[in-house]
Each structure stands twice: as structure tokens, then as C-alpha cells.
Image (cartoon, rainbow, N blue to C red; front, top):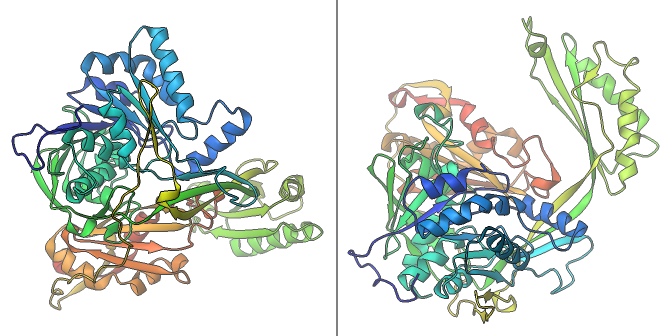
Length: 573
């Protein structure tokens, strides 16, 4: 790494090859080895953090203050560290979680034990739990830092850089800024790296995993992605030769829409304009990203708070055969009477009519009645609920059984995003020699504002239509951001985009997904991607850890939307 790399936009400069080997805590264990041995790399990143992960690490830290980091990463390094050193690959990861200094020490101990000399650095300052009174029960409070600390560590010669809560894209912007010598003013280059980082961050979701049109590629074991970053911030997304999956404009579009919202994608380094992104299929498994414009970042940093919200229990009753509605009414009446003396604060019933008439298989003749209870008091959702359910075993509806024995209940978490002045958040790079370097926040900032609505294409001319599933002409990918759900929908042809842009309005979206009918839905159009991005506020309650709905991370919301039928022009079918 150098601090004064190739000139911005130098066409002769060799690209920086950055690969990713983890999209979440628990991702494919052998991906580190696969990425280090499958082809050339300069940087290997690993993204281990998510909203739910921070809660898990917070509970780990409660048991042992020396923990709070992703332990899996250390086990991967037992073999991967030697491979990385032999191949000259530097490692950058946010596996430090709540304790980056502790993980950095553990990496040094591992290196000493296996006899591999490495220079280890870490980035800290994101942990704001003690900085102010966040209210009762807060386990973690971490600001999302940018890539400047990572860049400082790499410029100082670090072979391994461990961070806490940084933005996922910072794992790419930091190395790119260090290599090419970008400054904070190089907003377009930084924005290009942010977009590449967002594509890489979820691992194999960029190479065909979780892809709407998954039958078009062999995705039984997709390879992990890498980005060839150029001096001007443009990039090519690809993967190692011979690995599974595929890299296409479709797989990259799907990941670009994942967990984003409007055209302005804000971060601590830069605000990237997603409406400026251009994608080009450059060759097999090679998609070029260019044209990305950047703006000064906002003056605040997102800070994620997690806390234990209370206790939760769940019972799923199986209702088989005839009179499903009557059976559901009976068990509801019986359970409500049993809970009357100490009713949990929240009691929610959901009947999923998975049954069908005259079924050849018993499971296909059965519906599922789900009872979810929550309360601040563990006793209110524990034996009081599970005991009441089991006591109905010989006194309830005919065919009574449940999918699993009810338990004592378990704690659930709550995620909340707040925004703090960037100047109030320390950002410190602890270099390999122990020197501490303070990184200043962006000096030029810009408040976020919605850009003008883009021009939409001319609608398709009238013609014959057929009732069919939306997924025949459009892809989708969905996910979570706190209590909100995001659904990105894209068309695969210009004609389909002309129809989609005028058909899938916010009103039509709510009609197709009735669970969203009473919630705020916002639509953003991204014509360069032939895509619409929808945000549904409040669908997920207080975040994934609160388990507020059947699909708590909204992972399948997009597939539900694609399965819905509407009138589609025959010319598209």
C-alpha cells in the first residue's frame, strides 16, 4: 500500500483487486481459503456485522468482557493467515465488532503461535455506549465509521486491519483510498468505491445467491465476488475462475437495490448517487460499474442502538382437514381464557391457510395457526403460555398437535437508529507500532435532500394483456433496515421497464402486498438500473431481533411480490 498512489483516473494504473469472503457472521467457513487460493487478490475483506449480530455480540460481552468480536474469523485465520502472507494479500475486516482491540491482540497471539510475522492494526471509536445516556437496557451503541481509519492503518504498513462498526462499504473505500491516494475531495472516486463495496458486502448475493432468476445459473455453490477498482473509482465486479454462480448485470442490480432506498446513498465518506450508476456486461462474469457521482457526506453519523426489548414465546398449532376456521376460533377462545388472569402485553394470532382440499399428503391438508406473545416479564410468556397450550392436548380441536413443544420463552432484541454529530464521534486508527492517529470527520458536508423525480420512459402503447405473475417480467430483492423493509424491483428489458415504471405505483404495491396497506410506502425510481426501490416503514416492528413477523428480515417479501398476479401486456410475456 502507498499513500500516494496512481493519479486519479490514470488509465495505465493497475486495478486494485479486492475480494470478499464473508457476508455475515456464520457465512461459508472455507471462503477465506477459497478466495486466497482461487486467483490473484490485493485485499481480502470480511463483513461479519449486522444489526442482529451487534445484539449477539453485546450478549457475549455481558458474559465475558474480553469477547464481543466474531470468533469465527480467528478460526478462519488459523489457516488463512499463512496463505495471505505468502500471497501478499492484506486482510481488512469488521470482525472486531464491539472489541476490535481484543481481536487485534488475538490475531497477534495467533500469528506468534503459528510463527507468521504480521503487522496488525485496528480502528476504534465507534463504541458510544458510555458516551451518553441512551436510556434503559441499551446493550450496544455504535456509530458507523467510514474508511479513513482503515486507510491510515494500511498506509502505515498493516497486513491485517481489524475494525468495529464501520459501514460495510468502508472495507472497500479504505483500501482504495490508501492505494490510489484519494482525498476527501475525490467524491466521485469514493462514491464509485462505495458502490463497489455495497455490491461486495453481502458475499455471494452478487454472484447469483438469493437471485430472482436463480434457475438460469448453477448456484449450488456460488463463488464469492471481487472488485477490480480503478484509479477513477470505476470498477469491474467478477469472481475467481472456475467458481460457481454468475456475475451479470442482473445479479449486480439485485445487490445494488438490496437494503438501499432513494437515489442518495449516504455514508461517512461520501454520499453516492445511485441514480448515476451505469452497469455494462463487459464479458462472462464481468460487470463494469462506472459513471458514479458523489456528493459531500451528511454532517451526522448513523448510530445503531440495540437493547433487550423483553421476552417472547411462540406456539404453532396445526389445524388439519375440515372446519379450519372453526378449529382456529376454538383454540383462540381456549387460550385467551387461560391467559386472562395474566395476559401478556402483546398477543398476536396469525392463521396461514397452507391447506388445500382433498389433499393426498397430510401436511398439504393442514393450516398453521401461530401464537406469538411478548412481555417485559419472562414469567408472563413462559410456563403460563406453554402450559396452557399443552393442556389443550386432549381437550381441544380434533387432530390437535403443535409443530414443536412450547418452551420457556426467550429474550428478544430491539434495534434503533439515531444520528449523532460526526464531530462528536472519535475515529482512531491504532497503527501496527501502537501509535494512535485521530481521523477528523469530513470538513465539507451536505444535508440530505430528496433529488428531483427522474423522468420516466414513455409508457407502452395499449394492447392485449394477460393475468400473470409479476415475476415473469421483473426481478426483486428485499431486506431489512431496522424496522423498515426494502423491496427493489427491476425490469430486464427496456419494454418491461416502460410498463413497470408506470404500473407498479405505491398504491399498486400496497394492493399486491396487503400487509403493507396501512403503512407508509415510498417509491424511488432509478431509470439507469431500470428499477424501482420501495421502502415500507414499520413492517418489521423494532427490527429483526424483535421477530415481529413471519419473515422478520423481509428476505422473501420481494418473492411474494413477484408471485402476485396482475394484468401484464402480452408483448412482454
